[in-house]
Image 1 (cartoon, rainbow, N blue to C red):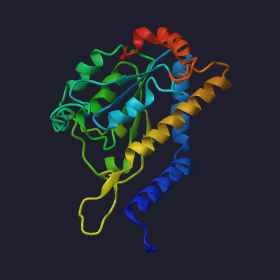
Image 2: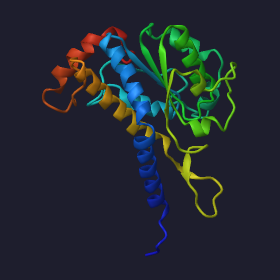
Image 3: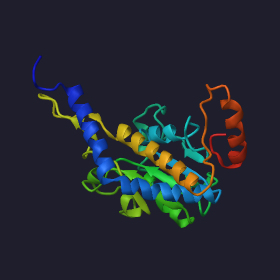
Length: 250
């Protein structure tokens, strides 16, 4: 076997290195985001999550999830999910000025709530305007974005702002412009993005630290059980009933 690592090994090594960088260099970001989330939950506020197209995969990771926080509500507007056909339409929809205001007007988000906006490049109009619209409503905004990627591109939003320039707090995904991470000899385009793996790890770390902070404050964290455990349905139903009028997926 060759001493040279194959592409899969190089990708996995890169993921491990990026996770180590999160732990060593960006733990303070997760800590600050966890304190914002704990503050919101302690005040009986909600955490809304928005991401267009593949960024929405991370929104799906967070809601109605075993071991996840019950007061997390995703925003999945028409035209911005990966089941749209043709899926290429999503690239145009996320650049559409004014759409974010239409979306947020249909969400029961209020001052004191928290909004997490996920966008790897941070340049597209809907993500930027979601953050702008939320802040006008007195909602604090956390951005999950790649600073390296975002700083390498210009904004497509009418305001000229990128997501990291609008948000109150940034969780930096790291990575590289274009997201794909592995170079192959004979192929110009890099393969295999890192943002979903790193984002899921950062966000689940955020959930864990938020729950820990709530416990430190003497507050029981509202955490879902797996529906496949015998006690799961009964436990989860109580949480769903508590937040029912504010959860967008019910």
